[in-house]
Length: 115
Length: 106
Figure 1 (cartoon, rainbow over the protein chains, first blue to last red):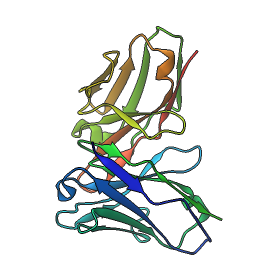
Figure 2: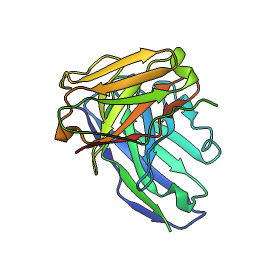
Figure 3: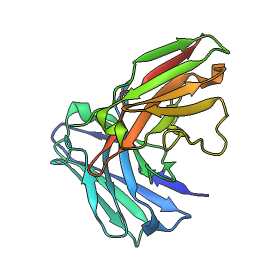
């Protein structure tokens, strides 16, 4: 069964950077895109970006594209989300989601607190 | 830029029909997915391609589409259907979520 393991909670100061990882298990790593979706406390879902691990192509939400980078490491079956110049409104749960627009599978989420 | 608009809340009594709309110009040419999210849990897909139901999703969940509006209908709503529902649409450049609809069964 597909399994996504995300890195642990992070507490960061405003202006700092954070890097969250999503390790994948039990499916062909390069066969599916990986998305990042975040949810601020009491708020809705917000798409952050995606990567195609097969060719490394990325897409980002327009409002975040100058601060976010999504990368992948096929040797570790892991996808990473880096968010820079953190602000208090970046406080959220960050989910990695395999193939959000297809055969989707959600990670458990990583809490990021900016304070 | 594209946006998807949902009503903030919908309330129905158990056994009644709940209807949640998702509107946006892009929906005239792109499919929508619907996700259900319960407190403290990751979202779960309940409808894809506007009207297709994944395996394991009860038949009371149905989707429909007309022009720039898609609708999720829960027929004979159950207490366990309470939660937040989000529509999602993927375009060539972006992925959009609706603002979410809180469904209350009371």
